[in-house]
Picture 1 (cartoon, rainbow, N blue to C red):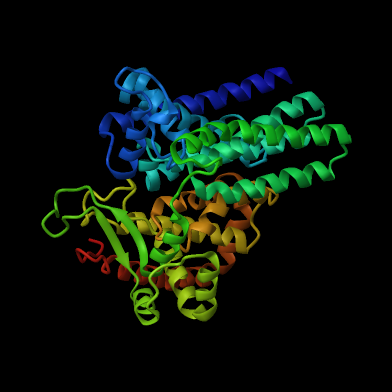
Picture 2: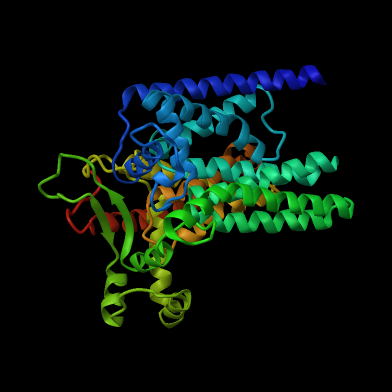
Length: 458
């Protein structure tokens, strides 16, 4: 048994090395972008050390965006600058795709070489659409990695019989749940889901009252430990005693911007500077803009205002959010920054469509071998659901690509799917063409709506 476990670890390690090499090859061909969000995070990390090389969290004056991700970047920069960041980040990406992501599947499929190959293929597919998240100092990939880690910790606590060891895992679980929220505040919602799941599984377990209470108190202590630095910053810099990450009401602003915006991107290129002098690349929604002008709404001051607006305009709002979803399923710029507005977009859009059409066939025709994995997947999908009404960027939907890739890579009954396609190939072909034309039409209309420079896929 030990030899089998060692062999499995060795083959996982082979996949780890393969992905690490691929990441370093990517880094060898690109320069790090230190602009806008990526630059903001990096500069916040650098600011944690003052001119006398003295470290203090208070050097980051407002605590906005949290302390965790800037601290990670600051430590990398302090140790070895960009080189250290590239190496550490490549290691984290490799760790995610060869250990965390496969273990999220809760499936025995792919042990050994098959698992290593599947992990590498999942990495390649995700990288094709989102390599910018893997290489630049953006917080999205770190949030997904930490969210996956929190899911695995919740699973481990559930099955742990040793109360003291379980308590230690609970502390770690609570800390990671807070930390993932600190990295990206939208992960507050999967954090709530995981805590409720944690309590429910403890309640349903046959553990003693002492073990259950120790686990709950451990998770609470972990959350407090993870949030203590943010609380320290908030108290000294902002005069508030709270572990909450300051966002200046960003979520309500996002909901208002999302009424008029089908998609948001950031332009950093030089090719179309005369036509597009500003970095803000806003793809407008004509229906949403008309709705805002007709109702003369200027903001949502509360959540009741937002839900009341949906209640009054359900059809228009449903159409706006459907267009958000469609446009996020079809990518344009895998680097997550716009370098060339005229780049070739049709090929990645078609590949993304094939990915999600296949994903849909697997779900609708029950071609999944292991459905209990959805308890794990929900934690990754919840941020996608809650960010959908905002001024969405493609990177916000990266977890959905991960889930689709995971289902196809680890859980699809290919024999059953092949049989279904063989019997229904004519119907499938018609649906593929009709749905594809509809999606491409909505997507291309979004592209030509860009307020500063009209574009279409070339």
